[in-house]
Image (cartoon, rainbow, N blue to C red):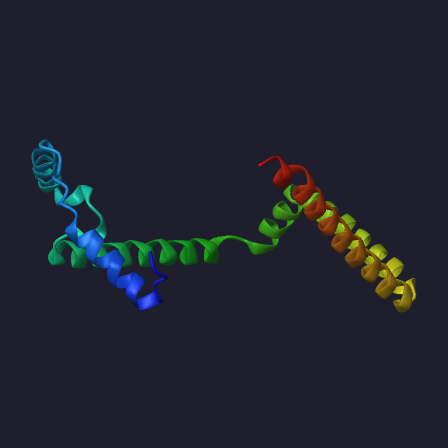
Length: 155
């Protein structure tokens, strides 16, 4: 067989595939597809996604949701205006004291780490970063060599 260039190969493959007979679908496929379509059509609109809802229902839902959200915000605003805020702040401070302590411990650890890293000369930091990058590249190369020698030679 002569060596074909890219266009001739493409034409050869195309003509070969066109000469193949069409595959027939399974006999039960049509009935299964029609049953699935019927089942989808029987699902009520309120069980489908938002895009399948009627326009009037979508509009009513948006109006209702906006009204409820506004009512809840107004109720919280009016409710907070009647509460004595200094007593509320004192109670919240008592109940959240553990979280405040955890925050202060975390801030202390962060400041300590910043001081320690700040006391290391920059040349050492750059050297350490270069060493880590060199070790990463070394282990990557060793892994690739092990893969080629152990796995590829067995296949």
